[in-house]
Image (cartoon, rainbow, N blue to C red; front, side, top):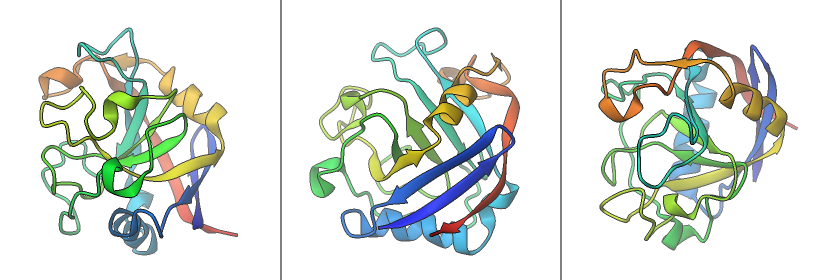
Length: 179
């Protein structure tokens, strides 16, 4: 396990990254950190029950480099489901954004509250493959909650993200390994 500090315009979040249990996804995230790619990034999405149109609602903040997920700076990676890693989408879980299995790249999200709908076999995705948890917040859940409670609006081009885009996004000022 290694720790990463994410300094945002609203405060610091520290996450432990599960390099042993989720080696592919953790290595991908840490490569983005090491290359300084997240220093031009932001938390840009806040999903919560009042703005989530999906039947199986989630509460998360999502961030990264490319909200469209169309131009990742590094190649996509193999999907490490929660079935394989044993990690779960519990309060504070850090997980990789993906469209289809094997499409995760630079985007990630932090879960607020236990959310088994995002695990392997969960009902949030029709393919039931879930998302790949690769870390857990150990400091700064108050910052995560502040971000999630931010004003959102409808400037997304993707239908299910309408009303979930933060206005304005929360800048990631520094993302680095920490002691």
